[in-house]
Amino acid sequence: MTLFDADGDDVTEAPALTLTITFDGGSRGNPGPSAIGAVVTDRSFDPPRVVATVSEAIGVTTNNVAEYRAAIAGLDAARAAGAERVVLQGDSKLVIEQLAGRWKVKQPHLKPLREQARRLLDGFDTAELVHVRREYNTDADALVNAALDLAATD
Image (tube, rainbow, N blue to C red; front, side):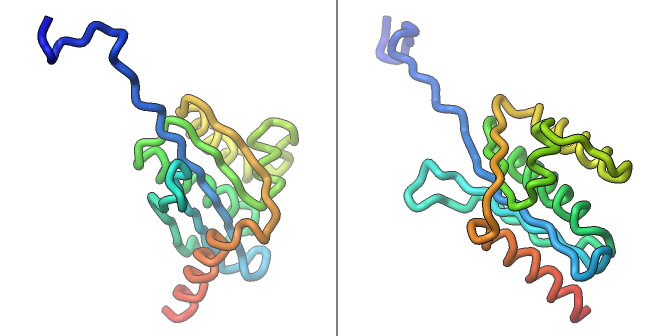
């Protein structure tokens, strides 16, 4: 045995990368000009390290569609950053409860978005869904408003 041989007992696996996704979607009018925002953070650092952000105008749609599209964009960004586990949090109780399966999706146009988000969630080793109050979602909200403001000047 050499210094470079591993006997299995001395090898420790790196912990799975867990990232937190804070998402928000918004419309000015419902429907109206809409945008999405998401912040992906690694909370294993103190202070937490921002890994990715999403801020994008998405045209005219409803607030609920914007919320789902923000969650989807955040999940995509977390996957691209190498997340194996995610915590998805947002202030849309509708999106969180529908993704958790506790509420039915009654609006037909939201069903494909829910399915897309569920497929993304199912691709992670674990996924936790957390509803947060608006005052804890200010960073994602700021990204939504920045995208809406920028789109309004174009």
